[in-house]
Image 1 (cartoon, rainbow, N blue to C red):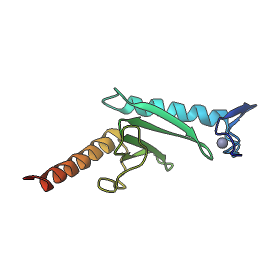
Image 2 (image 1 turned 30 degrees about the horizontal axis):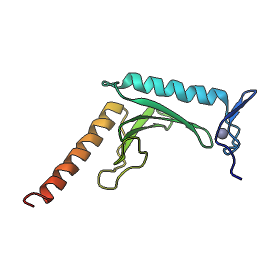
Image 3 (image 1 turned 90 degrees about the vertical axis):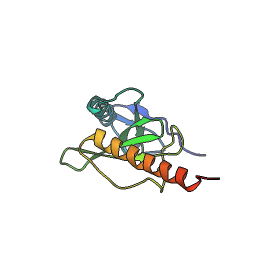
Image 4 (image 1 turned 90 degrees about the horizontal axis):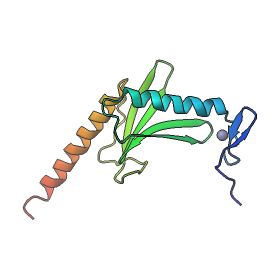
Length: 131
Ligand SMILES: [Zn+2]
């Protein structure tokens, strides 16, 4: 039998049996708040969704189409990186256009990812030109 990933609220704890880390409701709420803050930082807010999930702590990212905007806190303010999936709603990246670029500005991280993906699309189009 596998343990449930549905979080259970018990006092200050908000953690699922499958996680078992003792995650707190406060951590959950902070993750949501960070997501809202980052959404507010984006120049084009339309279509972005805040995704909060639990796995040994509460985590947050923003997602739109196949674009996953990752939020990092290394203690010097937030930093952002992206992973672009081939599928809408997909979470994984793609080796053709994945890099480890980080920026303090989520708009820069997203723009750079789009530029990389578009460059890759052009290369693919060029490689099949003439068929
Ligand atoms: Zn937990």
